Image (cartoon, rainbow, N blue to C red; front, side, top):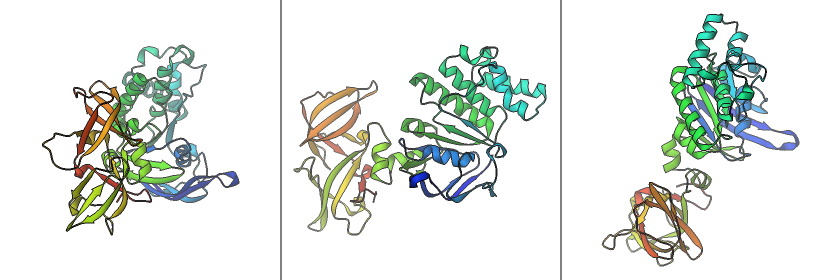
Length: 365
């Protein structure tokens, strides 16, 4: 295991194209960090810099305090797994798995034992005599993953290794990797654009957009308390609702008005629930996860707003209702047994402790 530290690490490509703005990041020994972001966010650039496949424009990388500036990729004791499996077509599955260990001059008995151990864990032991051309896409990716871990590297870098697989295979291979992880003890960095993958696998998530690190935190923190509007809308399916509102002093307290969604929706708010800025009044966006919204009981107090159900999507265990008011849409995730139908006018509510406020710059406050 190894601790990876990035200090003001940056990369500028030819013609001044910025791939990665300066960032500081510490990946503790044995941790699984998921780097999450859309295409062009700098995820793969970051991974290639850690691997030594690209040179940084500025800043530095250390492994357990050792500067990696002049250390070649082959001497960094790391392995990489790519989106498309890279296997030797003329070698059997066994020989593909054994290749990295043979390059390290392991003894044959040790190689055979390790290959069979990893093949059992990945459920590919019956395939050891086959060549890659005789394997399915999911089987080839399992072999690729096995080859990366068979020699027990200290660092494993994964560049969207599941994105080309069908959903059931994707989930199965993620589970295999998590099962393997505890026995490997390696520090892992996985890059992906799949927020579900990030939330389900990571110890920590680093959210990137256009080469900038926007937020670093545990999955629950990233989901419940996004640091900015981009993270709020990118993480979560459906995405967090962002509703323009106005907060104003009213009497001895404060009141919130939904300025665009439902101009008649207005309710008092205690100081403890206000945005943490000075002053806590003016224009904001009110952020609500769809599962935080529920049908309002007529006897219930607290915040409320109206909308007309535009569409209902049945998801099995729950359903997603799309509410429309004056061209703005709000999504609510409700219990599957909820009686609600398109065209119906409904009244909704939520708990104020689940609100995330965003200022005019798109930062949470």
